[in-house]
Length: 462
Image (cartoon, rainbow, N blue to C red; front, side, top):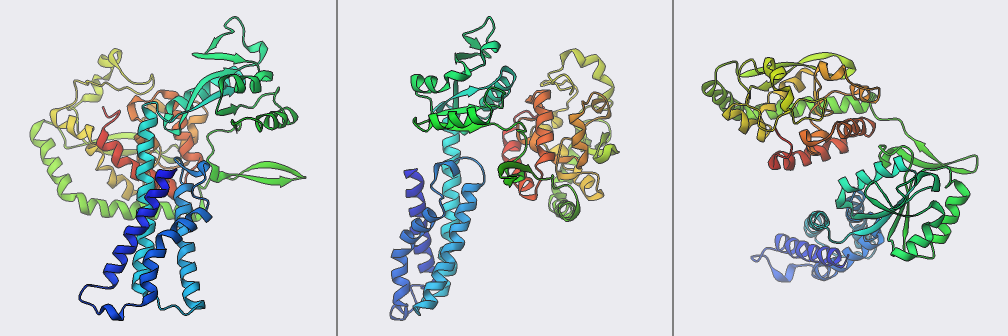
């Protein structure tokens, strides 16, 4: 946390100096510079740290993951701008407006860059096993398995599970190890386990044994330790923006908002998609022409590959791609089925013999998907959405997976930025359903931002 505070302070110092130099050029009259503005250069970093502290941006629960850390920095910038304006009016301070307009937004931008850089640094260190908090999972066996997989999958959150506590009836013959985790005790022994192993975090899953009174007593007992208590809701794929605690009949109950899939928000998304797709086509036209020529001269067959996919409401459409395989590659799938590296439903091969030399480059950097911008303009697809499935895949879908047809498929999406072909089928289902349940424009922008990194790394691209 000290690193963040020092970075924020230095960001404000740089912003103050830059604002001063821009507003008061060296050739200007130094005697004409408002005295208050010179004092503001020294005060800005101190004021900035104070305002960020007042916005509670240094509280550990808001740091390292999620958007709230950045939202609080933005709120602090607005608060400081309002405070400076109010003070200058109240005390009739001669502040150079040019300095204020440059320095305060720049301080916010540099602080956001500092926070983002430090977050990425910490995530890399946590991926290497550093700066981790010890955690135990409390609940029934099925829930322990699911939560353990999720925590291991997203280790950058900083939790290292050292064991679990299970009901006595669920311990069976394997009373010492479950799902690769030591069974440290029963549900009645959680506090003793926390003391013995100096646990930092206790994650509690829904269970009959830990009902309201029992869970309340557990929280009271954990207050005497340094461990924090996390409660996993029964519905785990719903984002916090859709969950609110509201008083109902004198009880604080979780209210789950409806997903934002209709009305003005959908119209806004589709308008943005089509406008951005048209702009992308105009901007990338020279690149696409060069790729089309490369495909045409290096292998025989059509430049574009058109394939039937399933879109919103289960309607089929023709999805366009640059051809990255030999002509007639789809007819060779039965002969190669035994060598599939896919997840049991999707056919994928890491070293697919059907892929051409140019196709390897196209697939490595997802350049073969650029023609799908035409699908976006036509209204078949979105820039961001679930992966467009084949009709043969849809035939094997379970009930939950049909939820993805409430929205248009996307050129990119959570599947694209989370590992693509390296994901298991269960993970693919979970990710697609999560996107549908939690869709928002901010969510789309976040995925678009992460897509650049995923395409550069090429993880799961084959």
